[in-house]
View 1 (cartoon, rainbow, N blue to C red):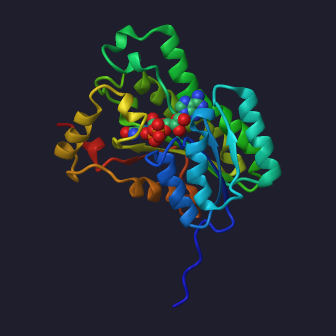
View 2: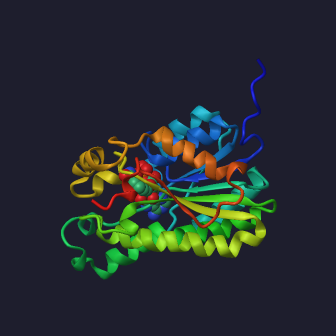
Amino acid sequence: MESSPKILAGKKGVVFGVANKRSIAWAIAQALADAGAQLAFTYQGERLKENVEELTGTFGPGTPLYPCDVTRDEDITRVFDSLGKDFGTLDIVLHSVAFAPKDALEGLFINTSREAFRVAHDVSAYSLVALARGAAPLMPNGGSIIAMSYYGAVKVIPHYNVMGVAKAALEASVRYLAYDLGPKKIRCNAISAGPVNTLAARGIAGFTSMLKYYEEHAPLKRNIEGRELGDAGLFLASDMSTATTGQVLYVDSGYEIMGM
Ligand SMILES: NC(=O)c1ccc[n+]([C@@H]2O[C@H](COP(=O)([O-])OP(=O)(O)OC[C@H]3O[C@@H](n4cnc5c(N)ncnc54)[C@H](O)[C@@H]3O)[C@@H](O)[C@H]2O)c1
């Protein structure tokens, strides 16, 4: 039997946010690559370089890998300059990046310092705007920008604190970017994931009890798998979702619909 053409064949993407093999960015990258996309990756800093290099090397030795601290405009400029040279054009951007100082993710939200608030918003929300601005000129035929969010953007999740406020800013940014970039056929959406045991998640006080709570209370009575985030990423990256922009797609075993 002839196999059907891969749905991302010929598409090129860049992935921000792989730290290790547990990273959500890595799960989604694998789904995009399996569907035929050619991918480039970035890593936050020297500390993560070797790890990320080892992972991305599995896509072939020529896989572009650039350093990028998203709080640095010059890094972002350099990444998109390099992508222009290495790929020419771009179809997909995955933003899977977030950070808040650890002490802001425990205790009370009211104690969030000015600096923790600033850092959380800079890394976790403003960076999407900066990346979209860098990517748009490389997307003359349209494209898809995908960000990762969490339910703490819209409801209070104890300990998620300033990260919830930053995710609210991220989701609002998704909508404004969708409006600005719509005429260029560039779509911007977010995936709101249920809890996944990653490096970033372990920084949230009481994270393991969140996993247990979802298992008990979500309609599907289980937590989500990386593969399911990959499939959602594939949908949003591909031409299967050409009329979908500015949306937040929940991949959370249905938890978001619950009132009690
Ligand atoms: N794990 C969860 O339960 C969960 C749930 C919903 C949403 N998310 C979101 O998914 C995304 C990915 O997180 P993850 O859970 O895979 O954890 P992760 O730790 O694997 O990924 C977070 C990434 O952010 C990067 N990062 C942090 N500061 C950066 C900076 N200044 N410049 C460049 N990169 C920087 C890290 O290097 C890392 O690769 C985040 O936006 C997170 O908020 C996670």
